[in-house]
Length: 148
Image 1 (tube, rainbow, N blue to C red):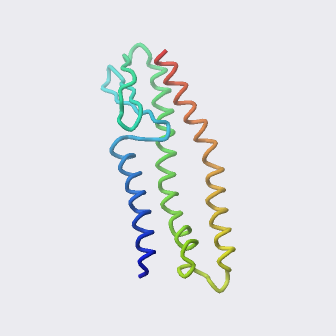
Image 2 (image 1 turned 60 degrees about the vertical axis):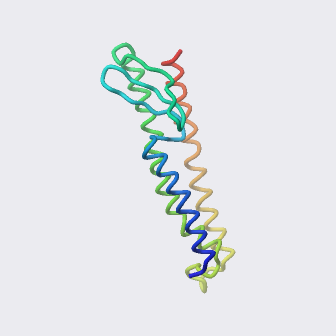
Image 3 (image 1 turned 120 degrees about the vertical axis):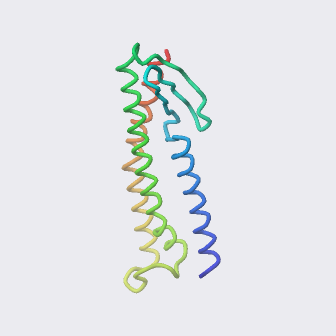
């Protein structure tokens, strides 16, 4: 196998492993917020280092806390789906970068394959980014309502 293809695959795997590690081990999501609950209190954490932003009594703000938890869970579910989709884009990117690995070489010219691959990625990004913006804004609004 070509050393360039192996290096490209290795770099992609390292990036994906890093994303999976911070997502699974640190409860990271694009909103930057997570929470821990022990029943009577809820701790809101911010950032990758999970710096404590606020500690709230669950009984005092139950409805707002539940709305925050739902908003964070929406972003987290969306992010986990995107991790799967990003990993599925790997063959398209690989076949676009390395012309010799492209399937259906005789039927689809390489330029058209690259255009289709870019189109698929752009369409997915256009479909998912606006919903991220709304979900992240919702999380920030809920956090601000609880903290202030």
